[in-house]
Length: 203
Image 1 (cartoon, helix red, strand yellow):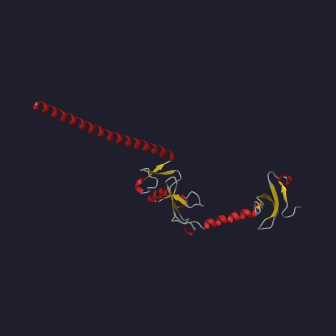
Image 2 (cartoon, helix red, strand yellow):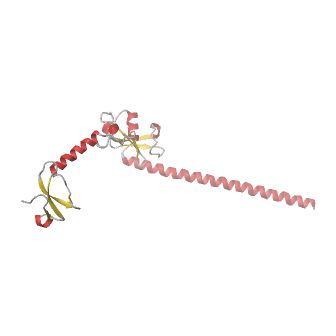
Image 3 (tube, helix red, strand yellow):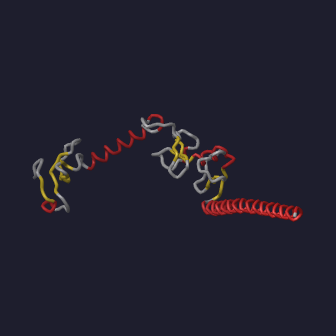
């Protein structure tokens, strides 16, 4: 039986890789081999106590969610993708729409539409932003689309339509410039003709 603090190579104790130390769990005192990394035992607790401690930390973190959290900033988060997420309490009517009970956040546009319809949205129902601005979550800017495939088709058509409208705007501006150039050219030619006729008359 090894004594506390014994260090052996993994091959000597029938384990693969690195060095191991005979160490006691800091919670229950159970002795076992654990990896010896940078001069200290890699795990200070046995597997049982480690799992129990992890569960305890999870419960504490869940208890500190929402307004009880030290990092609380109002429960509204702007995602890097442009969408907005809002925090919901577990007793909220729309809480079933939350993706995971560990996070308590739901997309704001889905919540706005759910409140407008006075029911929770089903997972396959998609809420589309009509103007394409992902954080513009007014009810009149939102549209409920049945299924992700329909939403993709609708979004692609909307993008194509926006490109065409931009192109039309650019062409209209170009036509206006060309018409202005033509008017200017006509005015110059008329002025030149008048000057020539005046010169001929004077002579």
